[in-house]
Amino acid sequence: MTFGVRFGEEGSVEEIKTGEIVRWSYGERRRRIDQVARESEVVIRLNGINYNQIFCSSSHLEEMAIGNLISEGFDVSHVTNIKIERKNVFFIDVTMNDAEKIKPKKIGSKMRMTGRDVLKFAEELDENSFLFKKTGGTHVVGVCNGNNSIFVEDISRHCAIDKIIGICARDKIDSSQNVLVVSCRQTASTMRKVIIGRFPIVISLSAPTDLAIKFADEFGVTLIGFASPEQFNIYTHAWRIL
Image 1 (cartoon, rainbow, N blue to C red):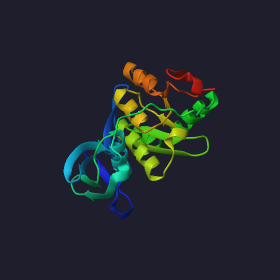
Image 2: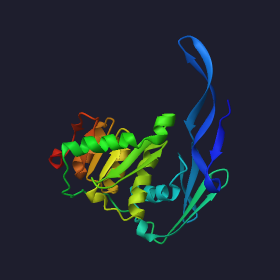
Image 3: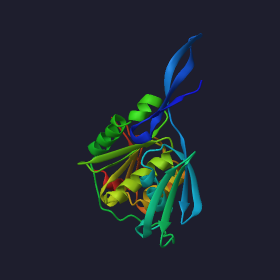
Image 4: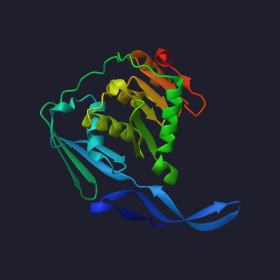
């Protein structure tokens, strides 16, 4: 069946498509209305040159572009202009005076937190999984410090992390004093974003890979996995968890 797109205010595309499906259950076929997460094609152009093609949710695109550049090692203080245009796909034009990359550095933040905080942040992430609860098709990422929390969702775990990094840059949030909470597994590629984003602690509801653990240990990140309302695993730099 064809799914219809819902549009929000000012013609912006909402993140859910609704349509009719056939549900097979216990040997019976039934027609029902279902909701799926909407996927958009985004092309980032850096100084007029196609830099990256991404498939993601269409919210927070400017923040996603900034976060993507940060996680790739660019100094976004050199960004002079960002323009977003929607045709058949979204085009994000970023202009930078200096496009030199910087190398990731070890995180020296002395931030510490309690085990109860870990459980609390994991619970907050679940409570803010609005699109996931409707579609089952998104990853949820949040930045928390015990006083304030910000959450975003995206069909791509990489883009969700980029968006939260971009939001931190936009709002001048000190990531070295905040915790990154994610629903997705931690791999070498996501851990690189955590390291360059300068988060000292990352809490995942899922599992880490061996390379994620290796990079977290090497760059001073406290990596927590399998966080649930009752327990969690600490893989590296456990001294930050009281």
